Length: 456
Image (cartoon, rainbow, N blue to C red; front, side, top):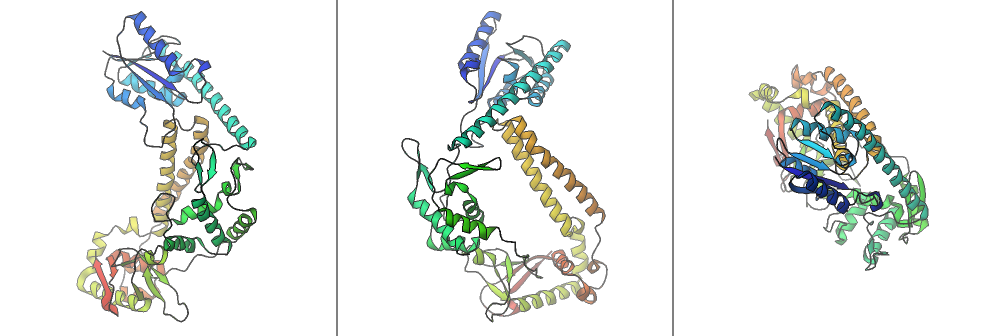
């Protein structure tokens, strides 16, 4: 049987509350001395600045070490968990592990019936205390925003801290920010801006040479570059010097809020063909200045990383269809149907819904990690997780309805040669994916001989 101490301190709690690490440690040591117990070790969770993933909670380490019959001593029940849910979850887990818990604000056996009642009451007080702290933090953030001070956190690209920890403009990077805004204000899209930065060899904010469209988009939307920040729907001064003038900012915002253009049309082999040089997907490029429509490497188009390959669209499509019909005549139809789970992969609606569900569930997991690491409070967690829970329910219902409505396209029921012309574009693409593992376009040469197909 071993006795362990556990303390938890938030950096936002002042020492006058009597919750500093020193006070908690001293109280636990005094208790063990009075009771004649040998304290094995004290585990401490102290909130401090640090990147996500670099801090492992002491509670997890303590949990791994606990064995049946051990005891955990905490200063207060509010130190065991940040709210009712977390406290009760931890106490229940400790009870199943046959570990006793003693708090110095009221010593009792958590495994007894009266102990469980007291535990519930104290947990309610713990949640009340944490709710109060959450309200205090929000009020503090609002006061900082109204005061026009920088709220803290990572500085935007183009700023730096000087030796006195004052925020200064990093002129080298600030010039890049100004150039991004100037390019955007002249009507250039974000893809063009990324290609231009890559062409010039400009280092990205992450320190490598690859700029992302999302990075440029975030820069163009960041009010910090005009010396402002937005909090709870209102705009305040950010307490930093602007990099971009107001006229340029307004011009860029006016361009970005234009009505979105309709989505590009889809083509038979878009996203199905792959480049033999880099393995990237190939997309359809319409006729431009008299050139024939063709499929070209997406990496060449966006990043410039690949010299790329291209092939005229009608040559690629004719070669693929002739090979497909020959493959079916050779017995490939039954083999493809047997090896491919079309109910799971061929319905575009299902694929889209499942992808959306995965993204929403990922957001819920990340939010839970932020909460369990103490980086957000329970009130903020509840406010953000509730709409995600509703999205999950809606998506699950839509997936259930879509699964019930899955029907096999005609290509799986009849003669593909005869039915091909009456199939929709989606059904044709489904048919190709049913039979084809990969279609690679070789570089060099001409004609359909460059089309290399790997069958399922």
